[in-house]
Image (cartoon, rainbow, N blue to C red; front, top):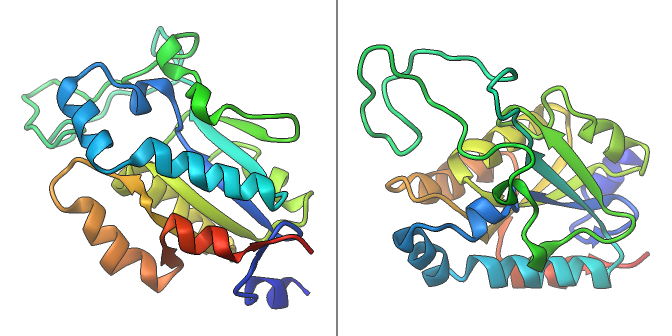
Length: 214
């Protein structure tokens, strides 16, 4: 049955879950005017709201992988990398730091997408939604073998989660107009060249049309 359900083009609540990745205030309600304009131009928050509303009408469970980093940095490590998260060069001895920390308003899920009873918040400490979290267990105990995923950033947390989900043999739907990255053409590259080989890539409207109640 697992194989058959993964091959079903419909997104039925019996085997499908919605994953809203890092749907946090800090990302969806940024202070930087340029980031505010970027999200508004792409209609990201309204698109995520429509996706969530469609999933709830169809009875899908929503999962919220959310960064939860210790303010003192005790759960992160310094490492050498060529650039920071915005691709600006780092000088010798510099290391990428977390942007938001546990207990801050920025680390809370945006109120427009707030969980309801039955939804699952998954606290994470790395890019992937699956690395040392209980997301796989939460999916498995509900019989979910297909995920619909949206959020940001496409080339960071979405990518690492999709790669992991593929290696777990999950069915995957990536929401084109619900994912975003401000780093050059990274968003388009992943949506056009990478994800189609392991997932279905579709719009919010197309995904909602496929959400059914068994």
